[in-house]
Length: 194
Image 1 (cartoon, rainbow, N blue to C red):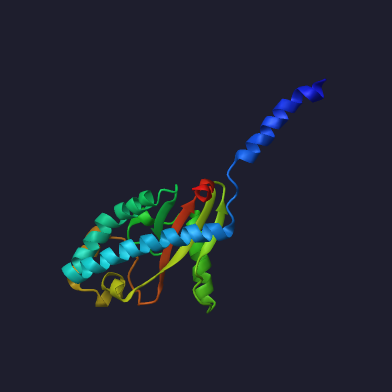
Image 2: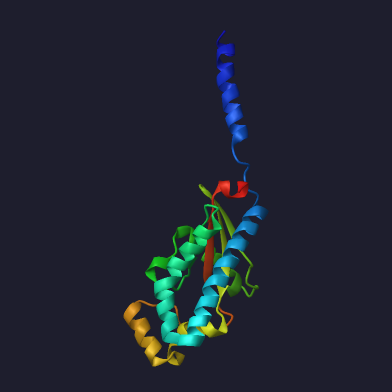
């Protein structure tokens, strides 16, 4: 008699399992992450380049310190998939971009590959307890060196702003093509069903 009384409960549990969203495959994670990282990169880079070219390096720093995080949040909201976007590095400028423990693992992955003389990987993916994380490397563009290049080549007015806004700045000394950090896209399991 007890066997039959448990049947409705087992059936309900089985139905609930069937109604859950299917698990994302890594190829889907890469496609979602790559698309989101591309949108963020294009948005931030075009705006930073415009500020640099039209208003100079000092204004570009103001843009980055005042608008980059809100623009990242706006891109995240516009993508409307429950994604979370962040830029981080082993050598941060803004403390709000400091890497967490999983991001440090991803940064180490890229840094170790480069140290071994291997080409920069296109991405790195982690499965987490609450979904996935996709990482795309950030490479220094030529125009980025106006604010991220060697300290002795940064214009004194720009260096003064950096010293005032970021007294613990670690994000200088780069050349075009250098690995700068990563864009992290956190992807919830539900992102594949949208």
